[in-house]
Structures are given as C-alpha cells and as structure tokens.
Image (cartoon, rainbow, N blue to C red):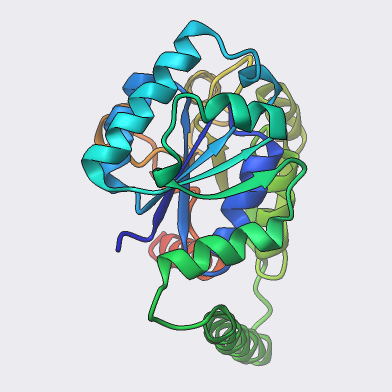
Amino acid sequence: MLKNVMIISTSESFAIKSMEQKLLAVEISAYQVVARIADIGSNIERAGLIVLYLDERMAAMTASLQNMLSYLNDKMYESNKMLIIIAKRKDYETAMRYISEDFVLQFFDRPMNLDAFVQTVFEYMNEGEKSMEEVKADIKKENEEAAAAQQQKRKFTDEMVVVKKKKILLVDDDASYLRIIRNWLKDGYEVGVASSGLQAIMWLARNEVDLILLDYKMPVASGAQIYAMLKNDSQTQNIPVFFLTGNSERESVLEILKLNPEGYLLKTFDRKALLTRLEEFFEFR
C-alpha cells in the first residue's frame, strides 16, 4: 500500500502541520491539498489514505463544497480508497449526505485526540507489518546512531582543530516549523530565524550567513520575491539559497528551478535527511 496520506483542508494550518509531523514520526508521509475538485483530482492517485479536515470555513456547506464532496465520493469508489473525517459532529453528519459510509474508515470529533488519529492511520497503512512500537524503536535507534556518529565527528574535529560553525538563516512564516528545524540544526550550526521577508532582509543587514533556507510559499512577499530582492542586492547576491517547499509536483519543482537557486528541499524531510543534505552541501563548497 502507498504510505502517503492526502489531507484535504482549506489551508495548511497548525493542526495540519501537527498531523504531518506526527505521521512523519512513524514513517508515514502526509501532504495537504486545498479542498477543490481540481487539486483533489491531480493528487488522489498517490494517496494510500485520505483525510478530510472540516474546519469552520468548510462548515457552511456551500454548493462548491457539496460538489467537491460528491466528486471525492466518486473518486474513492473509482480508486478503492478509504477516508478519515475530522469535524464537528454536526458538520460530519452534513458531509455524510454526500459521502457513502462504506468509504469512511473512522470519524474523529474536533478537537480530536491526535495520538488516536495517528494510531488509526498507522494500523491501516501497516496492516500485517511492524507495530507502531517497533517502528518507533527503529527510528529511536537510527536517531541514537546518528547522534552518536555526529558526537564522534564533533569530538574528532575538536581534537584536531577548532572549526567555526557555519551560519544558516531560516525564513518561514510558520513559527512551529521554524522551531522544529532550528532545534534540528542548532547543535551543528549557528541558526538565525525570520518569519517574513522583511525580517530576513533586516537580519541580513546586521549578520553574515553561509546559507539561507527560504520557504517558497510565503504570505505578503513570496519566496520568489524575497529571492529576487536578495539577488539584486550586492550585499546578499552571492549567498546560496535553498528553497523549502511542501509541493513535490513536477510543475512546482520546475517553477522553483527556473529561478536558479542553489537547490531546494522538500518539507517532508526528516532530521537525518536534512543534516545529511547540509553536510554534503558544505563539504563541496
């Protein structure tokens, strides 16, 4: 079974981010799509399970939302996929006028128990395979081995020569995401953070940096606009930039690459993958 979860919602809120991070911790990838027929149609095939998150903005049950639910019901029938619904009880009952109960794996009343949600998804996606406890134990072992290797590497480096840490600036409007990535990097790098393009420009006016990790989808000033500002400023034009993106679709990646950044990173990466990518980048500079 495909171990990808498609989360349908109006936007990528804190709740959606929390689900994505919790699922990633048990080796299940999740991606959010906007509650529109076109977006669902172009993303449903790679999903092993679908989650419908009905928030307050979807509770009105407009004609477009009714059409979307009917379309989702048809697509689940065609592709033989199951659905988890997260909603207030009354909104769930309204949605079930358009969705067959045969396709509903589980309903979670909001505010939901996140651990119970992850357990349900895990058991469905891993039927007959490892238990969640076994997967968590494997991940813990991998993290401990990676930490031990990193510690040994730092010890060797400290014994040979004192090396100045590379400095990285993280730019993302999601405060919780900034906090997670900063915690991942802080042992090996000096890390600055900015939650907007303006903050990033002001920070760079006072600090030197070796690499910028820039969210491609930013409100007010987009990642592409911020990137253009950096490249048009003699003080920042030579700083390498990696775009951060949650969209792995070919068109989206090509759109990023047209800007000719140093590279890009998918937001679905885990701690080990991010550290490895950064080590490779700085090793060859």
